[in-house]
Length: 133
Ligand SMILES: [Zn+2]
Image (cartoon, rainbow, N blue to C red; front, top):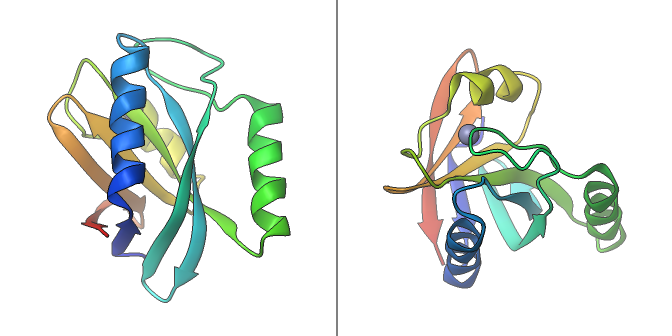
């Protein structure tokens, strides 16, 4: 199980910028990188259009998601997780998030109004430590 997410401060700033630019709607994107045992190492965060454009949920626009996945593959990386923003609430998975996480192996980084937190689903929501590098 992944317990640590290593991500550059630049990418954390990018995600924070996406939160502010898209507020009050949720923003989303993917985390591209590699998995090393229990650590997900993010090489870059890639913003993806939220095709739902609501204030309470998100959906990665399928074509942009496919392109991001394809580019990651080509450079020997993978999509290690997704990020999305909670401009109007804390960085805690919503009911909708929890249901969606159950079908997703990757890390979920949530940027909330109170900062960022990361999670994985493993018999329930488990916290992942964010390490800024
Ligand atoms: Zn959410």
